[in-house]
Amino acid sequence: MERLGWNPVRHPDRASGRMGDMTEIDGMGTERATCVLAANPSAMTLDGTNTWIIAEPGSDQAVVVDPGPKDGKHLRRVLDTVEAQGRRVGLVLLTHGHPDHSAGAGKFAKLAGGSVKVRALDPRHRLGDEGLSEGDVVTTGGLELRIMETPGHSDDSLTFWLPADGAVLTGDTVLGYGTTVLEGKLGDYLSSLDRLRRFSADVEAATILPGHGPKLDDPLTVLDYYIDHRRERLAQVEAAVAAGASTAREVVERVYADVDKSLWPAAQWSVQSQLDYLNER
Image (cartoon, rainbow, N blue to C red; front, side):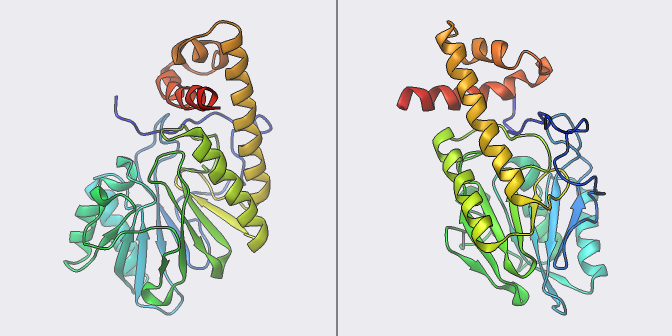
């Protein structure tokens, strides 16, 4: 089974499962960021993958974040949207390397022009010599887009800060609704969430632009929920182990009994991260 790595578990306070306003996802955004929603909805990808087009007002260049799956129709629509804005693609960035975010990046770069590069933390997903890492600042087309390493969902997960719009692009570290599955280490993920909570408070972030689902206009409430949920799940896993569960599968059967069984394989990745964390602790 391919590791896509997220889990649409619903927020307990909203019947719909969404933590943000019921915004139309395709076309949503901020002054500088516009979402183009990929037509790849599923239980694992929520409404589909959010591709973000980011550009400074008046600039003739745009940065495209997470071109999405290798779907020619979607990639063409992203490029058409950039061109309809009177711009060209100056750079492609990846929040992480999961295929629904990155598989179309190479093809999209070729569609956009031979000189377009793809920058990512993981060298395997780059097109060109330049990567992305903590503290980098992207200035294509006059933008200011700051890079933070936020591992946990995956080891190569990045978050982008767009200060002019007060927007945090979280990839799959924080989703528009539900909670993410962990492929990386729980300790790393908890540290990333705590860091994003402190950062968002310090800069008074106005919105979260996620990799799936609607944008979230109350970042601190969302991050508090994510942190509380993760620690509650950890306590449940610890209790399941104390009650006799010895494998990730056995823990899932106890802790995720109310979740559709088709999602249990994904839940096992998160549970294994939690078991590893408990063992290390």
